Length: 319
Image 1: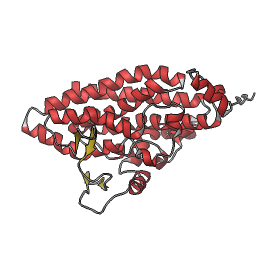
Image 2: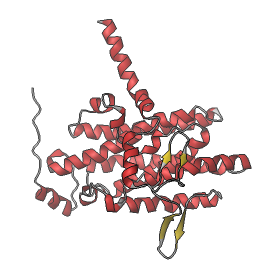
Image 3: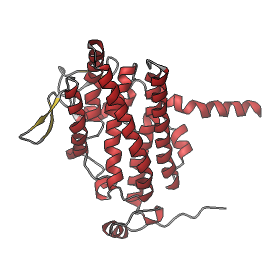
Image 4: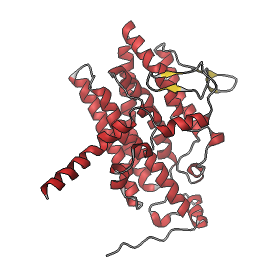
């Protein structure tokens, strides 16, 4: 028995539906361009949630107490659930998610470069919750408010609330750790490399953005640079409250947050250090770094894929 291939809509019919503020509920409501676009943004979302799990676990094992470890594991469980939602939607759109998750090469996964730089302490995990999860909340809240894809909009109601818990967890722990000098210094060391990585998180500047259909089709409501501003509007004040130095401030004349150092910039992922003193960096240089992936890419993807590989080896032995 073969599954009937759904008939896609014309571009004109799709846009007419969107203009009427009718949600896109299934493949039958999509045009070919809309289908490819929603697959692309869902894949990035799914991969980001999935890889955050081994990235966070790598640091969660350094939790200062059993209760703290339990909170971190709860966050990891949430992230896996969020990944499942996005992959399930992709499967409904005809994507072979088994192949996507378990057979892709590590470098082909699509998630922010920041997760390729290993989090190696409890402090770094806490700053990741405050920075990275804030970025995830910023992006997914925008999608929730604006997306024209009905199934994703409804699913994000749960995701939005859980991401709020993650970033609040980071904020509360940062305030707790900041009470003594040693804690403050540890936080500053983490912020020094993680702040700009999160500014990068939102992608290319609007002038270089390639996939404009994300706004045209209502996949999201704000551009990359606008989302960067939304993130900084809460991340920078948090750091200022804790007297943590970040290379950004609010410019009253421009009425926006501005970066106080060279940006984009070269980054040494091994030493977790921004090479601000080196030659100018272009966004093409950044793209090269992103595509090459970082030091933990292969290890974290292997952690995700090894269960199925072990199961297949066992099945071969049992035959």
